[in-house]
Image (cartoon, rainbow, N blue to C red; front, side, top):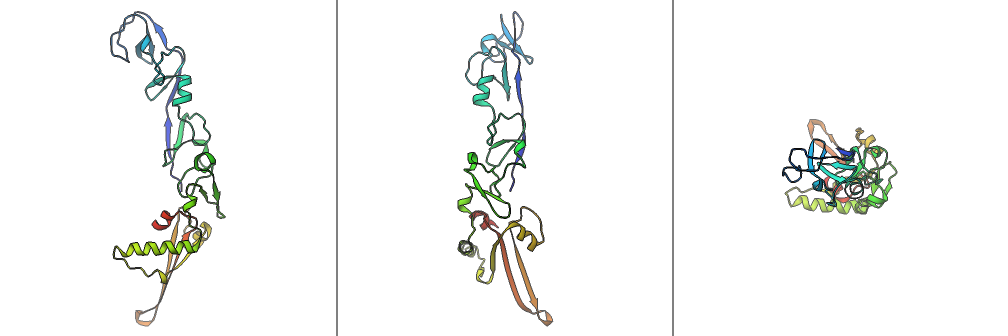
Length: 236
């Protein structure tokens, strides 16, 4: 299950600001008129002592970085402020992707690094503590894995819990009359006739009729994707 958004990281690494003398204008930092030496950069003027790093609050002299309207010493920015890839720790510039959990990644990892089929995080030791690959090619991370249902007895216990909850809402389900199986993605697609990678389950319902339209036999077979976490099994 993929849940990434693409974002653009706007970062400017700029040459040293120009130092000038006796120029009219007001300081972009304090709003007071400028008299004497000042810095000029990108159309903004600063008192020399007010052109300061937003991280360490020391004066900036020389090359600097600008990010989201603030200026930084290059070292301060790269070591303490810069957005870094949660997977490879590289400094992110330009487009990047972000998962539902707020982790940001280099866009180059998309489609290359394995992604947890349940939560959408990239599977790695750093982010998820590793993970496993199922026989049908899906990956599940070690955050989701402890809750994964791969045993039919566990599944039947969970179905019983769901049936009890449904009964409190007035829906009395005789789950004993329903055959339930855990299967892999390829078998799920073959049996259902649908080839969506996001298919989590389906129910095969068949009913035979006698003459005059009377029901003769009803059969219900529920298929669920094995290895899904408990909450995903419940919702499916």
